[in-house]
Image (cartoon, rainbow, N blue to C red):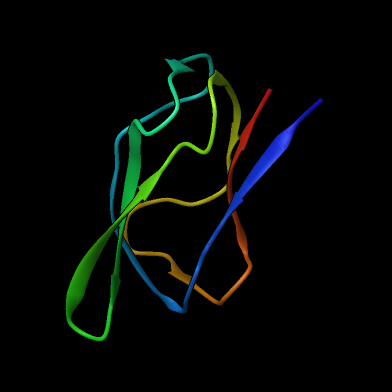
Length: 71
């Protein structure tokens, strides 16, 4: 079953720390989202393997956009 990691708010992607195929543990930092001039780390909600990275550095995202998919 896949888990979609979504943006909690609108902002810009500053850093992406994972790539497809990476294994992650719950609470691993996946990326940094800049919103309202603050850097917001986005963490893995559970253990899994990264199957899709839907954003890149410099992308703008809206609230609830899918950022990363885990399986």
